[in-house]
Length: 385
Image (cartoon, rainbow, N blue to C red; front, side, top):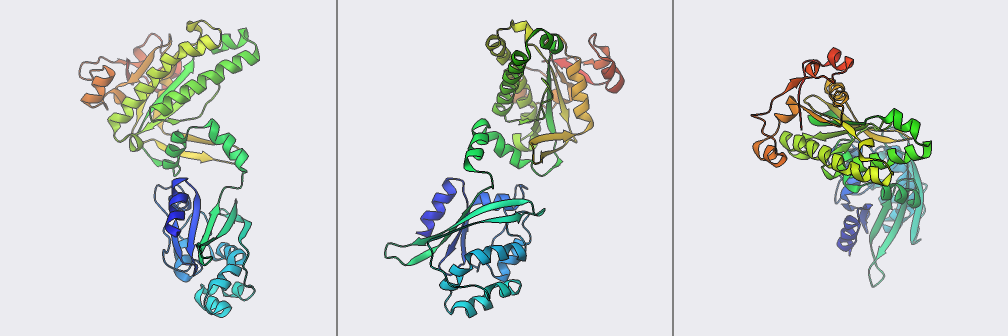
């Protein structure tokens, strides 16, 4: 029975923790373990087969970034589930008191046995910064003959399911999963895509505010879709500017990351006609400048606050990519030599590019070079792709 419950919880991506009839941990879903590890890409350890409130469990809990990772927070769990634990422990209160970690023994002394079918409460202050509230439900699991098989603990973020569903319905699960892989900031070589709408100031003056807003919304939706389809990370949107990153870590190789960056840019360029048509604009009125570059030492991570969550990157190459994009007037797509020469032969062939025969021009040598490009990145070599 417990195996079936564990399988169901895992299959539906739940935060769930399963105990047997003696309060020994028998299964914890992967999503719990990933979350408790703090999005590092690793899975938090649990003392499988050991008492949830025992010393071995608490020792491992102290290594978690989130969850009941201290005696105080584990005490919250014990105070709410302890009535069941007393009822389930052979020898009752005294036996449970001897079995739990010494830091929890005072709590046991204040418990009373309970036989209710379910318990729910909100555990406040979970996590390393003590700011996360987590609603928790405990459900008793009984066999066909009525005997106790164990206890299921299911929990979720404090936002209501209506709020969570609204946000997840607007987002792409593929991107959510990718962002989790970079939630812990670090050095990540990556391809960089910058794009910006040409003539945006004139267009904003000509259109009503509502119409211009609609154009911008259609544009960033198209851009995000192309980036996600190509396996990239959507960066910050500033006005009608577009930023995206394609880490080698998630693409599988530097060549794959460079290839995906070019593919995303080309797919976005192809999508612009649809944006223009839906906006009752001529195709030439929705033209983007593209700047593609390679960042060998980018520092990439997710920044999440109470008001937003976004992926960002720091490094000189980010500024250089912006300079390349600013020089790509006329709706051109300029890519740096550093990016193109990351392409392996098969990826280059897929893009129709021959890196060995490509001819480059320094930014400062372009007729469209901006003052900032001549000042900040004059020697960066680029070609049109």
